[in-house]
Image (cartoon, rainbow, N blue to C red; front, side):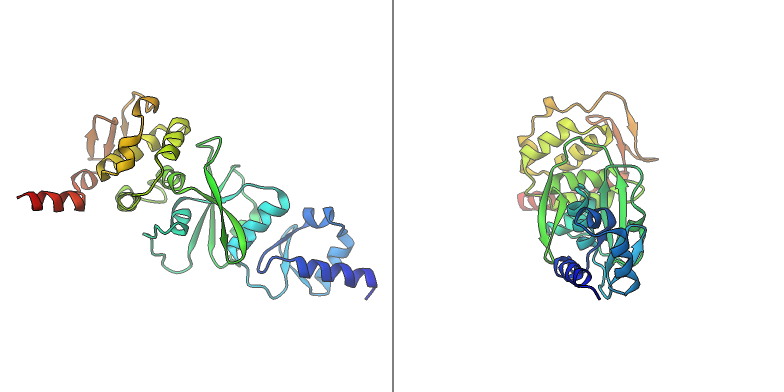
Length: 266
């Protein structure tokens, strides 16, 4: 084993993100030739996940570490989104059966093949969205790595975007009931700028129904919800204010705090 081979290998293994990935483009930029990478693989130091994607042999692949490596090494902006982001902020309504599902917002319609690999601790499910040009995100430290995450306000809107294919309106309303601390200014900015009228209408309908204090702080005159009617479900209830047809079960659902106030007043 040559001195250069051993030295660069030690540097690589020492700098590796635990349970994360190496991308060949990043390796080349950092002085690792294709020939050297091939030697590391043949020697068993690196294992191949997909074309141009490797990991340290013996690691148990972490989906969070993989996304962090992808963003850091290749200067990407892929983020944990929808209900997965809400869970990280403590809004844990969905109880997964079997392997946990990690929703990931990806800017393009074609997602990297490695994301569909079953070797991760979670099933990564990417979805493409251009709902907003400037996403509201933050970085959270999880298991020793920095992970880009949609804000709670945006994450809920992403859930609405993926309804009814991924979620249903009743389950999402149960989550909305717990979103008592959303930031009115962030909600306002998102609703003024997102390009999906259905998401805006359903969000406002649910927020008003839940009776959140931050809803009263919104300037609805600045939010364009359009004028056309949208039938979102069959045999539902038409909500004239927002020009949408919602599930009858949801419209007739009584908010628990309102029931309590009604009973106390009797």
